Amino acid sequence: MSEPARPRLVFLGLPRTGKSTFLGAFWALVQSPVEPAVRETRFGGDRSYVQKLADQVARGDALDRTALDASEELAVEVDFEVGGVADLLIPDTSGESLRVLAEQRIWYPNLLDACTQATAILMFVHPDRLRVPQRIAVASGGGEPAPAAEPERSPEHVDFHPPEAVSFKAHEHTSTAAELIDVFENLSELWSDRRPIRIGVVVSAWDRVGGEPKPTPYAWLGARLPGTLATLESNRDVADFEVFGVSAQGGSLEDRDQLLAKGEICDRVFAEDRDGLRVSLVEPIRWAIWGS
Amino acid sequence: MRVADQFLFGYDDGHRLLTGSRELAPATAVALLAATDAAMADGAAPLVTGLALAESSEYAFCVTWSAAESPRPGAVWAHALIVAQADLYDAHALEVLIGLPRRPAAGGIYLGDYRAALPLDAVTPAAPRYLPAGALDLELLERLALAAYDPGADTIVTHDEITDGATALLALWRAQWPSLRTAFSFRTRHVVRQGAAGFDLTVTRKVRGQVGEGTPATPRAPAPWLAGVVEDAAAVGAQPTPLRDFLWTFGPLEPRDPRRVAALATLWRSIVARDAAGARTQLEREWPTPQSGAELKAVLFAPENDDWWVLSEPAR
Image 1: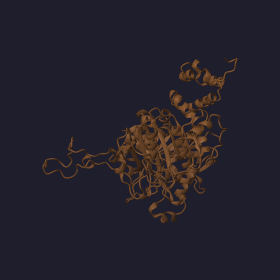
Image 2 (image 1 turned 90 degrees about the horizontal axis):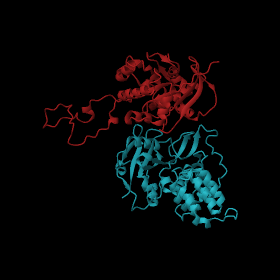
Image 3 (image 1 turned 120 degrees about the vertical axis):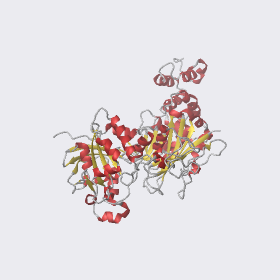
Image 4 (image 1 turned 30 degrees about the vertical axis):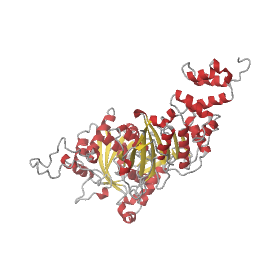
């Protein structure tokens, strides 16, 4: 019998992008007897944290946020229907730790450790929580009508030395795409000696994405985060990447009764691959371990 | 005039610094962000954190509360106070600092309350609002002293009553000689993971990754030096013990390492027992070079101090 793979995955994403929810749903599927895509092969160890997440997902509860110092993880040996046995380790990283990297340009120690040891990354984005790029004139308040005394200035003009200090906190205006590209560059540097790395973009709350026809996850990424997609496309020597849409709750927590009426976790959660084809919710993790 | 700079952390699309009395260097801001954040259930007992900020020669004392009023489960409030390390040398300033942390009111928060530095002088220390008044748990204090000071001990102590843990931790911290106090980082938490480092002492309800999670570790056999250290820590506010005088005299000459407390407290036992041979043996073992513990050796064994010891005839 061959040795199991020993993947070390890291879920990256800003706060409230669905990382813990996905981890809880994944663990619920691992334990579900009706989910054929994955099963647990070695029992034992401390599962209390991921079990709590899975229970919260099952009840349709909003999950507790992951504290910066939480140091929680999923450590389990599982057998994927397509792929094989993997001794899997996934630390539950806090969204704030990624924010520290994006905004303060400081690696939070726990995140640095996890990323240094990681064999692949799943990067989470929430479709309702994107910050789109703004013109600096708008972001700094310069978009308001210019004073009458200076009619020649365009609405986009911003004084380099305004008479009064302009309150501007970069972190309140940085676009999601810029933050993700910055994270990609940091990862690229961190893994410069073992490229290409594997990065999966996971669009969470995929049930909330509409449109007629509904876009594929790849098309959605191209439309909403074109800079991120372009960066990934043009750096294939650095990272092999995929895009997934996942609904790890199977619907909105705002209508919990309707959500729970859909049935058990395995009945209501779903995922789509880059082309919009339905796949098991465990597929992003399976791909992160073994690739296509 | 000595002041404590204050900083309020809370939930704003993630755990963030909401306001403060001054700007923070990025590295300090990140350190505080982590030190003030913790996994807490709604209504759980507040958590205390002491964090030595070596790079800026400052010290941060923080209290974290659950924020049940926040729409995001697991959100917390935290009030962090930063003082110059030199301010911790003053017992009055220390007591004022310990009484400063306050939780934002559940009915509405006014950030302006957290934008001015707070005086440490000419104010009466307040009783900590985050700790219920209660007796010091001496058995727990002993376990904490062992964990913090014994060179072979695990620095994580499990205990169900986290507020008792905070009370005992603060007693231990107060009793330390000032330079050790400025370098001693501690925290109470509801859950930590085994092996997580960075603090000299942690009191927690649960340790993940530990066999028998959630159950207190079996206390080790008490070390002989412990009784005096516990008695001294419990006496804070009352008359200092002779051991305190000894530790505060010679502790500052030692490296800023909590484990030196055990060495000095053991030596004190020999001094009290007038056991010159025992003292000399320990000095040879723990201060082996001529430079190490030089003042201690001179004070204990200089010719003018011969009358300290009851020496046997052969030893003379």
